[in-house]
Length: 329
Ligand code: UDP
Image (tube, rainbow, N blue to C red):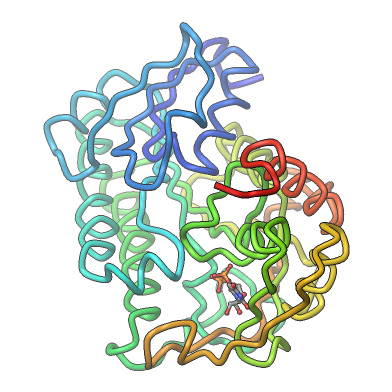
C-alpha cells in the first residue's frame, strides 16, 4: 500500500513503456494518476481506461501546464525524456532540450508546490567506466563532446545534479533512480533497443543484427521488477535525497542474446554482424560492459529482481506475437 490510501501521482511520460507499467501498478493498489505525455514515443494504447486515470497530452516544456498539474498531485514521477540511443543519435538537440529544460521546469514546479519528485535517470551516467559492478558513487567516464552519446549522458547528469541541488538548497524531497537496461511488453522496437528489435526481426524471419563483434554485454531487467523498485523507493522515506541503481546483474553478450532469441522464436535467418559505422552514424562509441551494483537499493527496501533473462524474453516474445502477429507491425 502507498503512504496514504489514495495518493495522486503525476507521471510525466506515463504513456511510455516504463510509465505505463508504473501506472498499472499504482492504479492496481488504489492510487490516482495524472499522466502528462506528448505521445512522441508513448502511446494511448499502452494505457488502461480507469476513472482514476487522467491523461493530459502536452509537453514538460510547457511551464504553465506543468505548474497546474504539479499543483493537483501529491507526488511527481518524472519519466518524460528522450530515450533510446537511436532516437538520441537522430535528434540530439531536441533530446538535450527536452531532458535539461523539461526537467528544470518539473523541478521548479515541484519546488513551488512542495511536492516530492522521483527522477528517472540512466546507467548512461557512468559512460564508459569499465568497473564491474557499477556503484552509485562511481566515476562518470565520458569521451568527446562531439559524441552524441555523451551529450545524452551529460543531459541526464544535469537532471541528477538539479535534483540534488533542489534537495540541498530548497529541501525538496527528491529521489534519483538510475535505470539500467529494462525490457518487457510495450517496449517499442522503433527506438533502437536491442531486445525488441531482435525479437521483431526473429518473428519476421529476418537476420538478427548484432552490432560490432557481439562481445559487448548487458544485463536486462524485467519492467515489472523495475516498477516494483520504483514503487518501493516512492514509499520509503529513507530514499529521499538518495540515488539508486535499478537493474539486473545477469550478464549476457549481445551475440549470445541474439542466438537465444533466434532459438526461442524459431527464426531461421540467423545472425548478421553489422559494423558500428553502418549501424550508427560515425563517431559512435559503444559501452562494452555494464553491470549494476544494486546493494544500496536492496539494503534499503529488500528489492531483488525476480525474473531471469529467459522469463523476460518469454514475456517479450509472447507480447510481440500478440501485438503484431508474426508479420510484424
Ligand atoms: N545492439 C545490437 N543490435 C541491435 C541493436 C543494438 O547489437 O539491433 C547492441 C548495441 O550496440 C549495444 C547493445 O545492443 O551494444 C544494447 O543496445 P541498446 O540500444 O538496447 O541499449 P544501450 O546501448 O543503451 O545499453
